[in-house]
Image 1: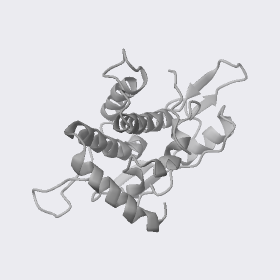
Image 2 (image 1 turned 90 degrees about the vertical axis):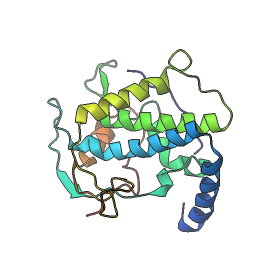
Image 3 (image 1 turned 180 degrees about the horizontal axis):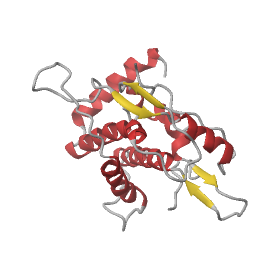
Length: 216
């Protein structure tokens, strides 16, 4: 697996209202294809927690504690506004999630959770480029990165096969299903961040994304 760097620019409640207004205006005039892609990104963010429901990898040296809670809604992560780029910057670096297995220079590996987060960040960057008028291509012949991530993330969802039953928020049999109303049992990402920070090849210290904690 090979990462390519995604270059992005390095909120506060007072800024949120203006940004939400801007995004609301944009969403009314974006072509339907881009609306669909933005919806896909929102759904993929939920995957950051779905991932934690899987069984532990057989070669993982860490015991993973579990967390019971509910997904939260954080609009800071639901925008293409460059003002939010700083939230995604750690995820788009080419060495994000890469750890050293031994002293041999070539003996490295990616922790899957971080690869998946990197892919989600690549979707956001591709959408930003498309909105700016940059041709992002149509498949892997134009760009090998985001098409790989599209297929990789589909297989990830199928691999974890989360069977949580998600109900409409209004309690009826019809209505929007956003996944915020159903209790989850997830694994903590803390141990993975600890391992990345102790064994990672990057000369940086990574922390979990702010504002994505489960609510109890």
